[in-house]
Length: 308
Image 1: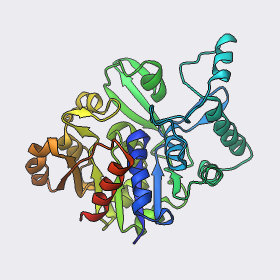
Image 2: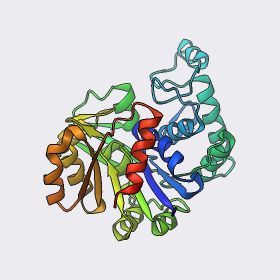
Image 3: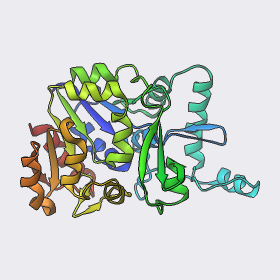
């Protein structure tokens, strides 16, 4: 089995990855994680997408929510509220321990990728999880005249705003984290996880050197659609695609990724889009992509690894 790279962000990615680590040796898997939704709160550096992936692969994620730590309590957050602080971003007590350790390491001079590697080791995660960059790249949401940080839009305001533009502050100057370009260059297969294409994968693609490496790769680049039956499996991907001028369908996903994507896996319910996607020069495989169990995730991971 050769080296595999997965571009990942959020719950959809984590679900596929928990199947992928059963199909691919974790040592052969490099996960390039989204940092566009990183945020500093209460003086702590929080990396939500990296955390979701870590918690899922460590077997401690809250399965009901898809994020956070199972069985977590919120005593610290409750006290912060009593002291007059905003508590719209739900941080559990165990979750906070991770952010405290990460922030401590960053203040001691560790890079984000070094801190992430240490946290993975502490949690028993064997796959190589690398943030897309050690430089800050922040997703900004424009809604008319209103400019929002990603977490303001996504969590605080619950995605009610109509998105008129999305951009990635710092991306043009950001350098890929050590190991990212080497992994892409040596990869025998590259996977685009079923994450929100605009909010979770585009921040990774917005780093010029990463995009160039993907465009130059000769490896199969296989994506899994995050849209099933015109709706996002989770989150606002359908709304965002539509507001940015893309069809909320697997065809819209294919158009968004363009020349980067070589093969798209879509759900049976979206069979009608197969011909249109193939006419755009992208191969299509139909499979069950709703991962309702670990077994579903393993089966989908097998498909992802088998198609050319």
